[in-house]
Length: 120
View (spheres, rainbow, N blue to C red):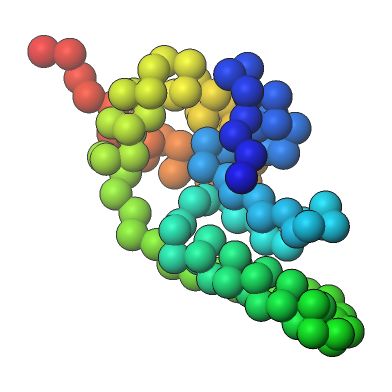
């Protein structure tokens, strides 16, 4: 397991979204990439990687193939906004900048901004 440094060097190098996941095999190849952390799908990716390593140890020759998969996760924008804010203003600003620079639709960004708590 790799944890980024406090400056977020790897975070910026691999994409600035806050919950990206990269699983890299023992040969240094990207085995799994997700723009959002979801424990269930990460578990499946790691299980696949473990299976592949077992097959190699048993002498099997494995061939890579491309696979598009778009699993769904529960989305709760209110909790997400509060989580970002709890992480500090820098986390929120970095996420907003990454969202604007990525494929996020403007309507989703506006929905995020609309979810900000108001000061009473």
